[in-house]
Amino acid sequence: MRELQSIAFIPDGNRRYARKMGITYSEAYQKGFERAKDALLKWGEKYRGLGIKEVTFWALSTENLRRDPSELNLLFSYLRKYLKDALESNELEGYDVKVNFVGRLHLLPKDIQELIKRTMERFDTGSYTINVALAYGGRAELLDAFKALASSGREFNEENLREFLYVKTYPDLIIRTSGTIRTSGFLPWQATYSEWYFSKKLWPEFDETEFDKAVEDYFSRERRFGR
Image (cartoon, rainbow, N blue to C red):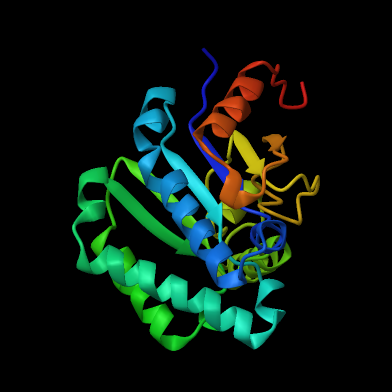
């Protein structure tokens, strides 16, 4: 069976879900965060069966930071809640998980930066890795990597550049929800030969059955890596 070691999600469609269901953004984001918890943790047994060792989740883009302050405050309130829950409960302990937060984290509120630091320090080893991209943009990632490599004085080549990327692995499969067929600059270096699956489901509707469809579609393809 072909390998499927690393996957990534663009969880799109929370606000459209609110309009579709006639509920508030707050209710929709709560459902979206709960779905993220499923995708990152509760489906772990399925991931282990498939050989998946790493999941990257794009939670907040640099463009999202320009949204209305009231909506951002809502998002940040849920992020605080789930970070505090991770630190105060023992729920993550049973998942053997390493947690990374990547992006321009300095753009986030100071208290969230501190919660992120504490979370990464507590969950710094594990056989299963979660990367959460916050204040992330693909162009920003490349620009930051280029600057860091230039400052390092090391030779400018692909291998050295990879060391300065936010995410250093290459996802086999990237899933975007909501029916939008666009990459939005997600992992532009790493996703060169990734397989993409565009689900018509809005993110709060994306369930394990839909994930199985994405995996089935992935294994039906022939990956050539440009050869």
